[in-house]
Image 1 (cartoon, rainbow, N blue to C red):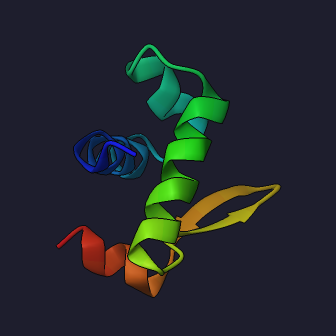
Image 2 (cartoon, rainbow, N blue to C red; image 1 turned 90 degrees about the horizontal axis):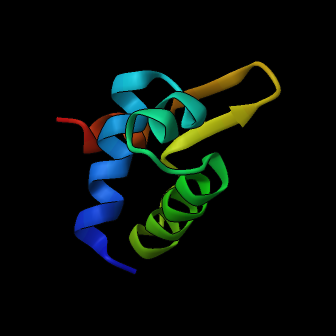
Length: 67
């Protein structure tokens, strides 16, 4: 995994408020964005987002990564 790219994707997801919007902004696909976030979470050993059918929200750990 390209950690730098994954962190940029994370920042874009936070900025855009969702995977699909971030994917559009980055000329990528939502599954690709989701995969990078999942890999970043595994690499860091923390969950960055709460995912639900209503969207996403930052976890406490995810919020710490934005500081």
